[in-house]
Amino acid sequence: MARAAARFVCRDCGAVTAKWLGRCETCGGWNTIDEEIADSGPGLAKSAAPKGSGKAGRTISFVPLEGSAAPPPRAPTRIEELDRVLGGGLVPGSVVLVGGDPGIGKSTLLLQAAASLASSGRRCLYVSGEESIEQVRLRARRLGLAGSPMGLAAAINVRDIVASLEAEPDVTLVVIDSIQTMWLDTVEAAPGSVSQVRACAFELIRLAKTRGFALVLVGHVTKEGALAGPRVLEHMVDAVLYFEGERSHQFRILRAVKNRFGATDEIGVFEMTDAGLAEVSNPSALFLAERRGNIAGSAVFAGLEGTRPVLMEVQALLSPNPGGSPRRSVVGWDSGRLSMLIAVLDSRCGLRLAGSDVYLNIAGGLRVSEPAADLAVAAALASAASNQPTQADTVYFGEVGLSGEVRQVSQMSARLKEAAKLGFARAVLPRRVARGNRSGTDSGGLLMDEIGHLTDLVTGFAGSADE
Image: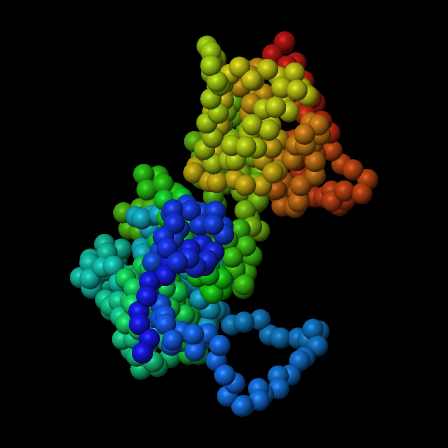
């Protein structure tokens, strides 16, 4: 008879060890080893090398790569920012994983989405494993959703949830809040462990694919900001959405990092209000609403988030360092890229920043990852160093290389059109090249100031300071 034995599994890479280790020897992650129960002994040895059943596998058919298929049907939630991130709405049979910090608004957003979809006559079910029914009803009354026809339940037993969902006809959406609280009685582990999360997610995903309803799983995150549980969970689902922002800040960013039915890195912008999450249809105007154009160290970056152009303010502040190691503090951008850009400005352009403390901030709480922000950051640093403000009607974008050259970036026309829509008159961008991607670029009516090297930008600020 098989006996229960403990084994230890890395939640990131799935490596199995015989004892607990502080650091995974396979992936190098710290504190990622969790204990789970597995069958051992003679029974395991037999199951590890099963004998053939004598049945031959059935033949599968292969089809040509070329073919036509209708786009998948979608169920719009009528929350435009959410539908944008999803690629147009929820796809039947799809599985979406939503992660974010505690209290960021995950449950609020999904409750609003389920209520909105249910009001259009679709059957939507919300299963809470963290809150009681009365707690969810209290939130619904605060959001003005008490009259929604959606179904509500509080349960953590996956066997009971699966049986209940199989008895429900014509279900469009099921929300599980959260997957870390779910429990399967066939797995000898506590809820939230690697084995429980993996097994519970598999059962729920299998049912969603079989019955054809959209499944949304809420996931907890670790202190590093990654989704808790096994990394295989992100591979099992069709879309992974991260809810970003500070709880003390009113803006929230919903970002798609994986989407089999839409664009990745697409964002939706929301504002947290007393009545729940409100959509922000024009985030560029929102991020620039409090900008003062006469302050040195500020530049407007024409960025791109997914398919959406977004304008945001880059702020830089230089402070003299009396001695010791200078400080580099960054919010919303890559600190390593800032260090590289400071070195380029110092070595290639003669802008002495090595002895100053540098503080950089992307206003509005947005996280910028594309290299096109290099030129805007350089403009903010040069403006702060010369104490000369940038022109209030100018936007910047372009990638900077180690030799100081300004390189081309993608989708320039979309960036320029967004800037023109918000009243900007001038753009500083990479110089046109013969075989570059700027051929046929629509300026959107803006005056384009093309530069090929970072010295052209720094010289402009130095000339303004001399005047």
